Image 1 (cartoon, one colour):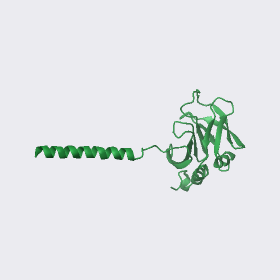
Image 2 (cartoon, one colour):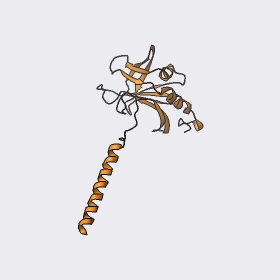
Image 3 (spheres, rainbow, N blue to C red):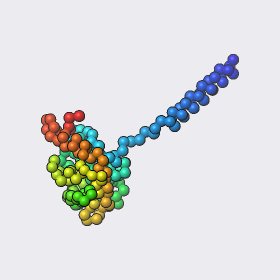
Length: 176
């Protein structure tokens, strides 16, 4: 009788392991959300949650990234840049989509070493970013690599951020 119980327990353990292996193989692997296309969502910021639109070049948040919040466009050169960034520097970047181009001076922010520029709601740069297939960003001095970002989803993401600007009680957190 002991032998039969032992075999049944052993068989049940093998069956359980086989089922777990089958589930692991058949289930999709969890992947972090990609940032290769524009998306807008609330992100925790210094002043609390803020509606933020983001896109990156290769799908990882360590890659070059554009981030838009009310009144500001931020440009992160990414972790692979071999340039020395010093507090207080500025750079003029040209954004090109198709035959259209807009240049803008960006200031390096000391807190996170992202370049930032102030933008108005009707800024030509926002207009450029809302349409087209992709946008290339080039430093006019040639110090930093050229990066190309998809514009897929940019219009909706930018509109969502801009609609949240100045929302109730003067904050920029939007109505979600």
